[in-house]
Every structure is written in C-alpha cells, then in structure tokens.
Length: 424
Image (cartoon, rainbow, N blue to C red; front, side):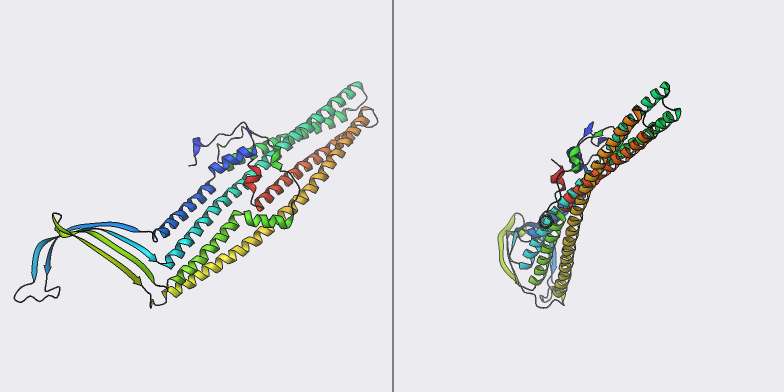
C-alpha cells in the first residue's frame, strides 16, 4: 500500500529518471485506483463463472409441528383435523449443475473480456504516470541547466569586470565601462537567483508527483532524460501504437465484452438444462430417521416473458454501438497523437540544431569582442552586448533541448512505450 505522511519514501541525493519512475509507479494513486477497478472486474468474473460450476449446499432442520389436516384439504369426519405436535427432521446435501445454459456461458465470457479491459487500463495508468514523471523531471533538468548557464555567464561577466577594472586603474578605460560591466554581473546574478528558485520549485513539484517526501534537497542528473534518435516512420509507428496502447486494447476488449453480452441476451431465448441431486436423512428426530435422496433433471424453455428478453437484447446492442464508437474515436485519437508528436520531434530537432549553431556564433562573437577590448580597439560595450546575445542563445538552446525531450516523451506515450523507454 501507498505510504502517507512521514512514511513516504525518501529521495536519493542524486535522482535519476529511472529511479523517479520506480518511485512513482510504486506510489501512484492513479495506479492504485486502476488496480482496484481490476479487482472489481476479477470479482465479477468469478461471480459469472460460479454459475457454470457445480453448486454444493448442506441444509438441515429440526422442527416441532402441528398440522391441521382439514386446512390441507384432507376431510376428517367428526374431528378438528389437528394432529401433533410431532417432530420432523431433514438433513441432506444438495448438488446442482448447469448442463446447458448458453446465456450464462456468454455472460461469463463477457466478464472475462471486461477483466481484460480493466487489466489494460492498469497499463494505461502506468503510461500516464510515466509521462507525467518525465515531463516534471525534464522541467527540473531545464531549470537546473538555466541556472548553471547563467552561473557560467556570470563568471564570464565577472572576468570582464576584472579586466575592465584593471584597465580603469591603468587609465586606459573609463569608469563608465567598469560600471557597465558590473551592471552586467548584477543582472546575470539576479537571473541566476530566479532560475535557482525555479529549480527548487520544479524539484518540489517532482517530489509531489512521485508522492515521496516533499523536499528540494536532491539533484536531478540524467542527460538521457532528453531521449535520443530522430522521428520514426509514421505508418509503422501508428500500427505499433494501435498494438501497444493499453487504452486502445482496453477499448477492443470492451467491444468483445459488449458483443458477448448481446449473444448472452439472445441465448436467453434458448432452453436451459440442469441437474439436481440431494441425499440425506429424514425422520422425526436425529435418532429416528431414514436415508432419502432425490435425482432430477430440469429443462426450462421461455415461452412468453412480456418482452423482457427483447429489451435486454436492445439494451446490449446499444452498449455495443457505444463501445464501437469509442473504439473508432480512440483510433483517431491515437493517430492524431502519433502524427502530432512525430511532427513535434522533427520541429524540435531543427530548433536544437539552429540554437546550437547560434550558441557557437555567439561564443565566437564574445571572444572576438574581448580581443578587441583588451587590444584597446573598442570599449567593453561590444563585449557586454555580445555576452547578452550569448546568454539569450544559451537560453534558447536550453528551451530547444527541453522541447525536444518533451516531444520525445509525447511520442513515447503516443506509441504506448513510455514506461519501457524511460525505465531502463
């Protein structure tokens, strides 16, 4: 069972994505709810199956009776008809067995498919948990990368300020340039502080999603969270998704169950055959009795039920049409999600390539501007502006990598393999 409060699991000092998934899959209330629904479906399956299995009962009674024979229709001349009190005892075992009941058999098969449907929904719940964990983990990784990038930019700005201060001391630079360089240092430090707070919030949110002890006293460090590889083939991915997506397979199982309910309702018009047997003791007391038994075969053939069976059939047909509509809608939804996520991966890959090229250009610009400044060709305005552009380029690359990681996670979810992909 899920632990609560102080019993929630602790997070390790460095949390990897597979570790996060393990914790979430053990503690998720969504999965627990799906498991509870599966247990209900299993219980219903056993109930329907029981009607097809032998039924064995023991019945015993000991009575003290008085009987009015006249009340039973036995004429007694000159007498009141009352006899007794006298003892009556009966104790026997009853065995019954359905020999032919197609309606109950179809109902049992339908319950089995409903159980399969519930089992698939457990898998779907696990996939959704995996997607939510990956998204929250990527958000934490993104904020950490932003914080670290700003820290690196702050160090670069601090170096520029030191150089500028030395040149001011040497009389080859104006105090205005040192002031400008310090403003850049302070601005980057403020942004770093904001990014650090965002990182803390992201870690707290991740801990909440994992349903672990809510704390930010841990680090995320798993570059593999961004995923790998390019966009797959569209047609093949859609076919694989239809075969893998747990909720689609659940919908297919629901259709099978609904079809069997229709067959069960129709089979209610057929005769049923069952056998009954009892054996035991009968007499006026446990000490005074004889063995008795009964063996019977019973055939039931419905002739007129006032339209009840017809109503059952129509209701079952309506449920089947609803299940088929849900299956069609589910297929369209999966196709849309797969195509959208593949398009997202393609776009994000281009965005990452463009941002990486821009970061390299910005780094070259900073280096060239610093050379011009140290050689006295220009003041540090060019360096400060170049560092601004480098900071924006680095931030754009982080956003692009985050978008790519999220697009790959969406694709894994759309393909029905999110847990398999990230729980290495």
